[in-house]
Image 1 (cartoon, rainbow, N blue to C red):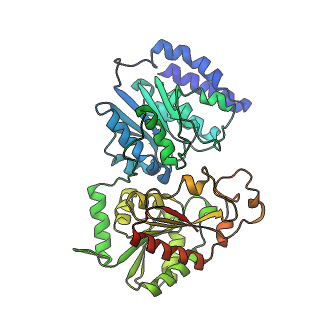
Image 2 (cartoon, helix red, strand yellow):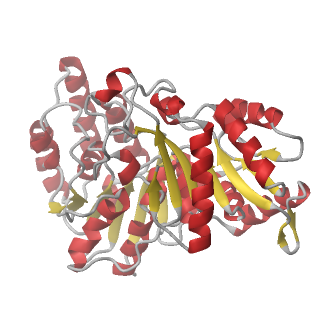
Length: 433
């Protein structure tokens, strides 16, 4: 559809020259062409083609997994296309609920608009999404750029639950961006967690709550076999199961203010080993976490910690964490993988204890879901973080280890003991200490 692409490209040049975006103007230009091509009309009068746009980071992707399961249950014979980004490519390929996956560049929905707009136009063209004549597009994202993506790919109906109030619009007004969605469905007042906000779309369509709200992290047989082979080669897995108590540990992440200092992690694991000699720690994460993992491996006794950072595909990380009895680490992708595998989570968090948690606060809305969990909050707010400045992460300094650095090893060790008690008692709630 070269004529549609030309409109999108030409308008892109205009908005970045003027630094002004108007959703109404874009729609005014596109509507006649969409009507002429009948792109927003059903291809066969039914629901043959459905797209679902999901959040792109690893943890966010896992938190939308029940939406994919529910979509397949509601539309068992439709052709479902999953739209995500390259960071979750291999896990998306293992998803049993979709027919195909359209993969875009990393961050293309959550990045700065001047960066994301041309990427979206290129993505739509390269995957021929306009020609698909989607009957419906479900938007399970907190980024308003996903609203625009659903519109310009020509979906006849664009369905979403209204994004949380803290997500700003890049240019223009919120009302204009909201106009890209045809069907706004309500969110229940008690839907605090992002999983429940995403599922609000399906709750409203069914007029009753979705029965199965569990999250999933998908892997495949090849990834499982390779992960188990690596664990056996390290002497951590025998034919009868785990030879030791395995704990997955992730000390990295993409945002600095969510990273508890690696030296503190090393001290914590040393103290756990004093109490539990048959525990072994598996360091997981991407290649960017290898430096911190190397420090950890050098700080602990030989043979007690094993570095898997940068060595595993995402599906293999799922398989490794699935062999563990606990996850200790930052609020990042592996934490949500652990929750999806039913593995209890201990998480240091940058939210200061002196600031009351709200329903939309990140430690609440992105808490480990439906598993025994202890979230250890920062001891205090530093500097300007007492005012919060509208940031719902709890700490205003995203580029440094700021408030989270006030958490003591003693405090996280208390959280570890509490989590062990919760596991013994079958307590699957989230405790904030």
